[in-house]
Amino acid sequence: MRALPLGASIPRHAGGATAFGWTGARAVSVAKADIRVLIVDDHALVRRGLRSILEAGALQVVGEAASAEEALSRAEETEPDVVLMDLSMPGIGGLNGTAMLKARMPDVAVIVVTLNEDVAYMGQSFDRGAAGYITKDAAEMELARAVRLVAAGQQYVQRSLKDT
Image 1 (cartoon, rainbow, N blue to C red):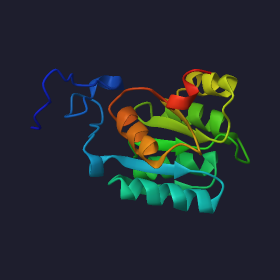
Image 2 (image 1 turned 180 degrees about the vertical axis):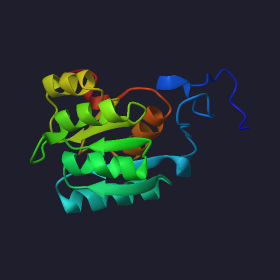
Image 3 (image 1 turned 135 degrees about the vertical axis):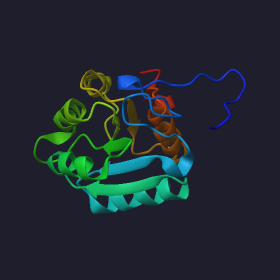
Image 4 (image 1 turned 45 degrees about the horizontal axis):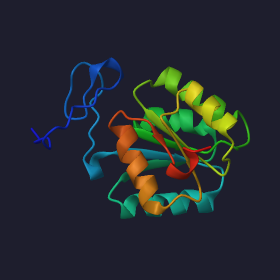
């Protein structure tokens, strides 16, 4: 059993899972290398860049997908804790992909990773089940922090977008 810092609370996930153990739903671990991430973006170069950032931050990338449709099957195969989902992709796109993924796998946290800073898209993302929203120009450390926070059951909005 891991020790908690003084004053820390144990985050709870849908179904009762805690960040530190199993209580009836799939357990979610928030130790750095234990967080399993699926990257979804239609641009291979972006996927490689995100993979590099995550792995440098000691996060485990379990797969990649080039569309939301592909992400649905890859998520079932790889059982990620967190999915990084681009909004603008061919096919059903990231908004619909997020909603469909959350319907199938409610314990998976989705972070929308996009170029779009429009608050309307941010609101739609959260309405469809996203736990986080970050733009592709965010600092590398901010992305890793967002992944850790949503894996622990919290929501995340990029700092520079909170005032919009």
